[in-house]
Length: 148
Image 1 (tube, rainbow, N blue to C red):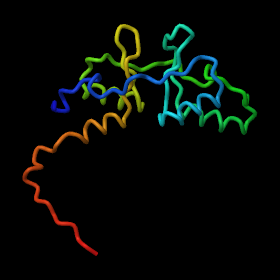
Image 2 (cartoon, helix red, strand yellow):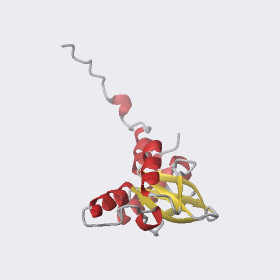
Image 3 (cartoon, rainbow, N blue to C red):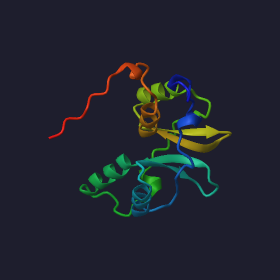
Image 4 (cartoon, one colour):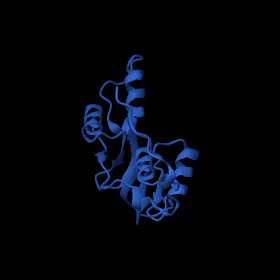
């Protein structure tokens, strides 16, 4: 297994990308995120081109706005963020982490030739790092568990 600093976006991304179509109603977006146990999705137009991102935070903001007479029948077009943050499949994992930290986001889409080939979330990064064996693990003695 590669050293974590040698991993690339392609090594840790989740694929395929779960997408939601423009025009999808609020309930449909919420159902999709819940069904796939994800916190955000790429929004695509009728041709399948990425046009934005919708997240649980966007849905929560809408629910909060309902208290102030927001439109109850919102569609994803009204909720999404049009800024899509992405990296190339060959981007080194440390650079992915720096980008997420600098931009204050929990997911980046992985792009290849203008198409989304995957997504990297903070959970994907934690999962990749947890699979790495600490360099001194062979020297750490095992402590027997106490029986109560």
